[in-house]
Length: 353
Image 1 (cartoon, helix red, strand yellow):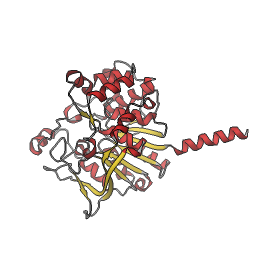
Image 2: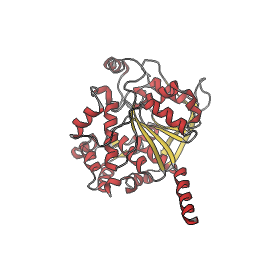
Image 3: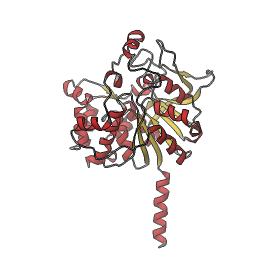
Image 4: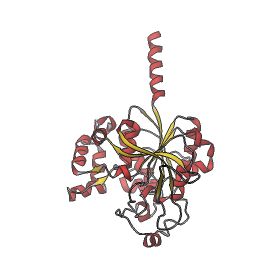
């Protein structure tokens, strides 16, 4: 009996030592949000409390369907919650063509949800896209409420992984500002501090989709903020050799078929010299193994919300900063060999075993 109690105690202690994570995402299939989700869902040291979806790369309805399908394949019944459908600035999608003409385009023509019509529902999109009924369903609550309730239920324990626009998190801060000091830390994929943007000359995609939300969030006095911007994300280039290695790791998993059918997979099939980036996967990898971070700079940060040429630009202030800014650790480099080995570790691909 004593031995049994000792084992139980060890098991409980191990569970308590897991990093509690809440993933807030504009989910797409496989690279890059999908891989981030799968890694966090299967990592032994991570307790993924839920996945909250937001419009950005995908419409929130699409993101819910993608999240559910990835978790179904991995046999991980983790809560998925539908969140904010639109950015905080009214009529952003309707006025986008005018905005692009006036503010210019960067080196990346990707538009995400701004370039597609909104689906009627996650159910309709799932059935159309996958040709069958879903096995899992999202929770009936709203993502903003889920974020608030989760933080209050686990004070000082939850790491929020914000790899999409910050609309859900900003709305949660507005609705329940008491959660800010209860958050352990926020880790973002967003911004471009020491280099130009990608979708406009000034701005990176995630924070450009909803600059008002990004500003609310990064200005909040969280205990710790860590940012993976283009400064580090564009150093990890996804090449054909990485793609082939991952397909080998996935074997006959359904995730391999999904990857082949994505824009990335189709592009590699047409042009072996094609390259891509894996933005959000870096964030997941660093949550699992912080030692992949090899260089960083701590600065006060902000986001430009003036509707003009620099709309959505992220700003870093190493010394003197404007009133209201909070500090963040801006990651500038990672151990790439360690990172790519993590991505291909079958620990994170239960469906491939």
